[in-house]
Image 1: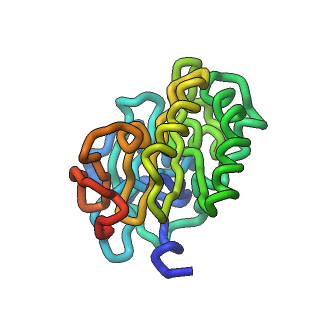
Image 2: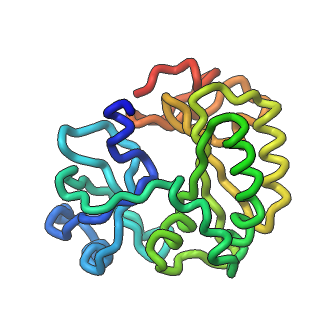
Length: 212
């Protein structure tokens, strides 16, 4: 495996971040989250030698704080792909019911094409920590790792399946250059928004872009 794949990737959950690594402007709730031993999530940002760009997650959407974590401090790492069985275990709210319904189809798609998928966002956080952050009206956030181009008609077929689920599903296509929303790639626009570590930019073909 290439060395970069061993490094934490966007959406990974990391344990080991200490409160003394927060900046002076960090809110009190962020320190409380870390003191409780909860993980941080890897975010997209330009790399710093020996440091990982992370975000601290609180109880609501307004509670998000960007920070930097030393790689040496990482005690545990959970990737989105490790959380794909969560829908079977906890089908209480709409996002987890949707996950249970979608899991067999995504598993089959990945077997056929040699791909991988995972659970991110609030659903991933809840499945990894046991902390309830999802509600009946929460979205389900997923990623699909697609190192090779996905035809737009195939993207549209997948999106149509997602639209039949009991909650909104936001699926990101993770290409070698960054992430593109499935909803955008399934559309007809000549350019889509590619989210890379260097920032977001409009591109015509996210698989032809150089990773940044």
